[in-house]
Amino acid sequence: MKMTRGFLTGLTVIGLLTTSATLRSTADKDGKALFNENKCSNCHSIASVGIKGLRPEGGAKPNDLSNTGGKFKAPWIEKWLMKEETLNNKKHMRKFKGTPEELHTLATWLETLKEKK
Image (cartoon, rainbow, N blue to C red; front, side):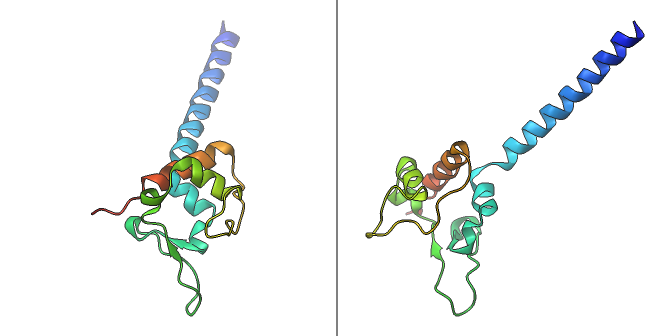
């Protein structure tokens, strides 16, 4: 009986820790978090959500993505980030290195960015 109770308590603790970690990682993996985590702000800014591009003074102005969704849909953005699509005869500078799920989350979030008229 004591062994069973201890075993069940252990399983409950493990279950709670696993659930907590899963919820935390899911919450941390929204589009904005992925944008920051993948250092997209090294080349891009998104003024509409308060992300300032990090290009150095005197460098090229960061491309602002505040109206990405006004121009592109998520499936196209996914292909662009995987270097499978071109824009002005150029491919994206870096291929996205995250998981397919992260790519989809990021592209879907970028599609929501639209300038208000």
